Image 1 (cartoon, rainbow, N blue to C red):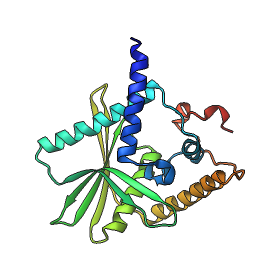
Image 2: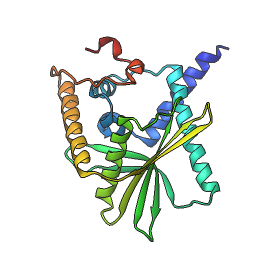
Image 3: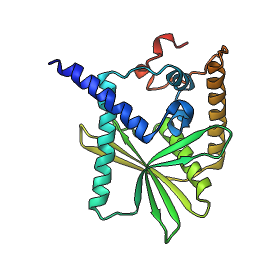
Length: 221
């Protein structure tokens, strides 16, 4: 038995099932994380999704494990006021759905707190810009849906290999940032629809730390 082939095939099936179950068909909307990443990569992946290699699939599973660890820890600590994988649609011209890892609710104080879990091989000194963009979309969407609540946001970053954890707290919705991200989403969605309509579009690229992991790197201008 070729163990690597078995793992690759099985993990691809698991990833496909997990995506369909929790996120649906991502070709039909923009996720909060899409808006923070390179527009070129996001559009090309929606049009022609690439099959992930074993390393990427293992990173996905590591991320799921990290979320489960966090949920188990909060449950063991006695917290019962949180929901997982909360879907919130943004009220705008573009179909945008935010899938939030954890939402903690205090009915007494009318507070909803977003906690986004990130599993990395090395915890950064500060959250990446793409992380923050995702969080601002999530908080903005939640603020629109629950105008009577105060919305807060935070990240918890885990490095499972080295047993390290970092908590980045103190975020709250910013209308100016949220509006700017929605404008970016509109441009991204417009380009995506144009390409689906067989029009020639020069996609914007956004060079960053994750370029080395992009499946479309070799053709990137």
